[in-house]
Length: 158
Image 1 (cartoon, rainbow, N blue to C red):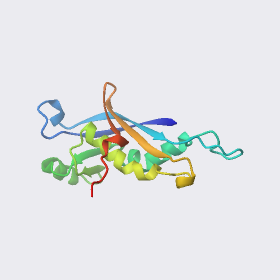
Image 2 (cartoon, rainbow, N blue to C red):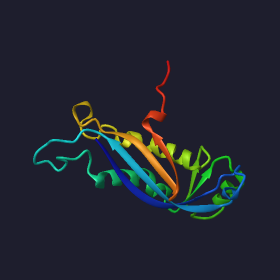
Image 3 (tube, rainbow, N blue to C red):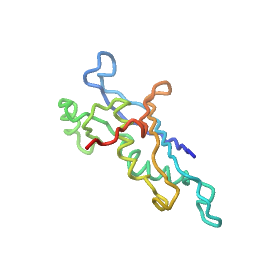
Image 4 (cartoon, rainbow, N blue to C red):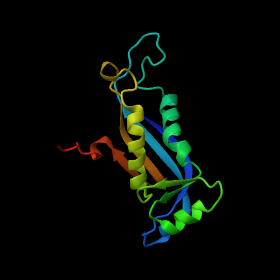
């Protein structure tokens, strides 16, 4: 069974090597969709009975690990030196320095990497409902988004 929770936040960024307007400082009203896969919990009398996970818990984890960190922040690529230095010069400015250019694709992947361990087997591990993060969808605009799926990660080769 799959469930999805959507959250929204505002953040600024720029794509330093972009050939068009995205090379300028600007912001978006992002939407983040978290899709989890797991078995429906069958535990009569328990608060999670009939659920994969309570939507309020899905939200709380996403807010704690991603949304609260990125909301009303400027997401800057570590090697975008002029902008990183400028933002560092602003006292109290909320800046998140990233190791990747903050494209929708990279932000979806970063969010997946952050959230995947936070949701994994939340309810009892192998004996529980086998909960795991299946997909992170990040909308940069209402018409443009990137998906990072569990299947996008290749198994580690020996």
